[in-house]
Length: 192
Image 1 (cartoon, rainbow, N blue to C red):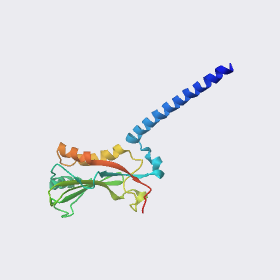
Image 2: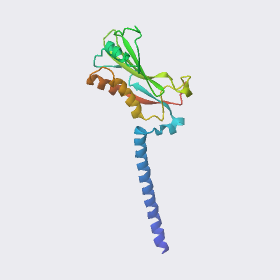
Image 3: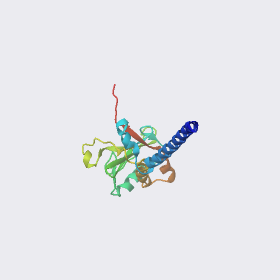
Image 4: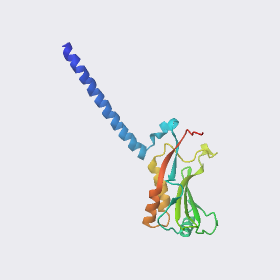
């Protein structure tokens, strides 16, 4: 009897261990899905890395293959009260130079920059959040982006909405959307 218990005890522990591993695996997969679509679990890791989320393009001002009519984009979006449109060269008349498009979602101002290099005539694209947020808790503008709890798909939806509302063809819209990336800004900054 004692020998049987001695043999069955490790098998029972093995079964419990396998069940525990399976449960942890399922919880891990479901938490990734929840992080992407419902609520971002990265906020629990805030002390270890993620203070807020930012939207960027891969390389600063990303060069574009397609040509963009900045005057048409600026004049079209200026009629929409949700948008702020600025051209550094002329605030009233949009010139072929650069165009900054801003829109507030919740308490964060999203910014899209489109421009044309004077020398080569190539268009470029940049996206970012404004340095100032409209959140009452952050009037000093200390937070530069969405909360770390904001799901990535919501940030993408906001950027894609801005791109979709521009007077562009499907190829141009796809090109801009492909360049948008979401990053997690670190809480710890090292200076040397």
